[in-house]
Figure 1: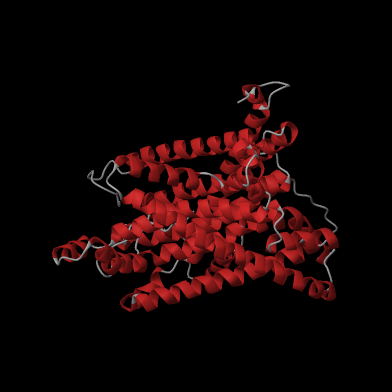
Figure 2: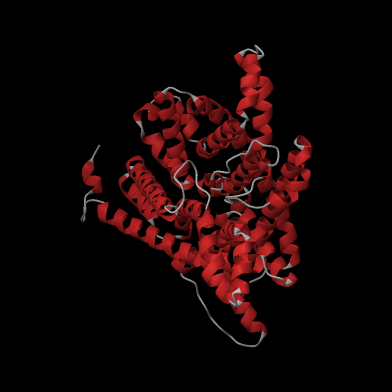
Length: 240
Length: 261
């Protein structure tokens, strides 16, 4: 095993791989945050009284959970700019937009993540006991305050296992962005492999990096879960 | 820019061929993934710490590793190893299809193992004990009590896993396999229309997966008719933590959040 392959500097690929790793994590965090917001809004739409909102959100969920992530990524990267342009052309504005690979990656992964998150939030919100909501309403809280102060904090605890699981899913989806030319961890490992013909070493290193992220995330998840449930009697699996 | 209808029609035979590849990959991966998982499940269920540790490590590695990394490692990396380079294995690893099926199967097996383990653990203990007391042999208990129960309890999660396998086969396009995704990209490079071919491929995936989940839901109701009333309310996507339909007849399948991948 030739360790100079991974050294930092001109002859090694260590710094390139680290930059790739940083890009992967930035992308994952950005897509996760945006996707979670999309998911919450989609869940509220699913639970709303409006039939139109309900069906739009349901269609969004079905499509983005059924179509492969790679396809959504390609469609966003190659197609979104064109779609926006044609939409503006229809109202007579010649708008030239372009979407760089990073933005396209974040948007595509966030949209997919949002579709799954919507289901998690929907399940969590309907699991909140109705009594809590009724009590809040009878104390004179407005619907918004009820949601913001009562329903949402309780629902968040129910949603936690699902949300942390989706974080793992997000990490495992990020390598796809190398297919649209982003120099993420896998993109860099691939370049390094092409240049040195040591594919095995570089992809193994990438694999270990992903497993480490998984392990750290699992550990963090357990810590947080214990923290969230510390008001509950300790025993077995938790349910708030 | 956007292609006309006749060009679109001329691409359809290509898409049909791509669909064939997608289905072939899916069926192979489901088959080999199940075989691998069935070898790991006894380890996970064993009391022996060594066997259990092996099972846990297997699941951690193949569930924690992104599919694309596995695929590239197998396709680009493994042929470098002397044991592969200097033996007949080299010929096998020359074929992208072999590499794709291998890596997808191991990846799927990681998830599948946990699906099966969860289902087996959800089988009511009392039934198993009763079968033992009645003097049934080990094999008879597995065949007559554990397996039928576990199949019913695990069906929903298995259905989810099937959907993920169908979606995951699209990654094979990145190692030159001409499945649906690759066909769509091919049409894009020829016509410079990125939207239409991807939408066509997306629609095919959508129909395929909706048909698959409908079928699995139907199968679930057929196998557990007593659940059919609840099945409607519980039908929802992956990662949902609470309320499983299995709660109805006593044995509850812990819908481990990990099942939605």
